Image 1 (cartoon, rainbow, N blue to C red):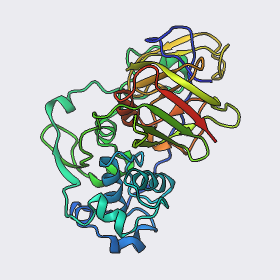
Image 2: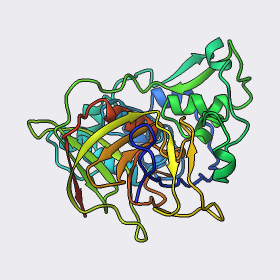
Image 3: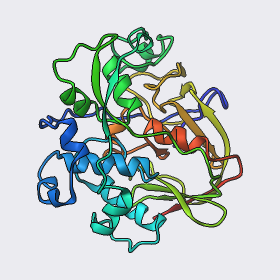
Image 4: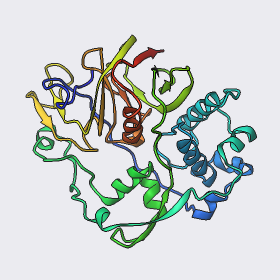
Length: 328
């Protein structure tokens, strides 16, 4: 079962998030990405590639989220391509073919990997030295913010932190430094979600408008064998941005010897990330995560886990009463 953040209702519990494994990156330049062509497909199947990085940014801009932008081909990219095809009435096969590439805008030389100058506000954030694994120690923190400027800027631009570090290796992360980031555009704000499908086996959340058109799609972690997600149809009951997290081992999982109720502060490294979308099934919800690179790669404790940025975008498109159907 999942948690209710304290901002919605105290005394309920949450899921835990897994920690990512670092992945080494190959050298990729701004021009490599912005000029990448479909003819580079053969190279895109072997490790990180400029073509796949360009594809992921274009999919993100097109409301078919690939999750973290990391430059690798994989299931999350295939699912995003399938969603994009459904959105545009194309044959749904998850393939990056000429028709999809053209409709994504891939034939154009666009500024997708761009320069960004670190501001005084960026550099002046209060970063946390580390997020303790132990919930007792974590509950002592006033906020569960970012641990570094790299983590903050990578998440802001929907990027895998290892990719961010590789693209900006050797650059001083201080005010006035110019770095490379993905230009993911603005989040979707128009169109209201009328119903949501949470596909367990596909590990994807699809949101449709009142005309039954798919308008946004996100990779998701949806439950596990030990802690399955709900079945059937439920409703959104409330939405909380920057929620706290209430740990109650008597109602959910127990972390080590921690057998007392704890309240963890809000922040992007909160176990439910920066968003909680409450469902009518008690203790379950759709929420963010402290570890975006682990979406659809690790299990959840029953809830629907998205990247923080996808959860935040969805939160602004839904209202209480929206139907959420869980499908196998």
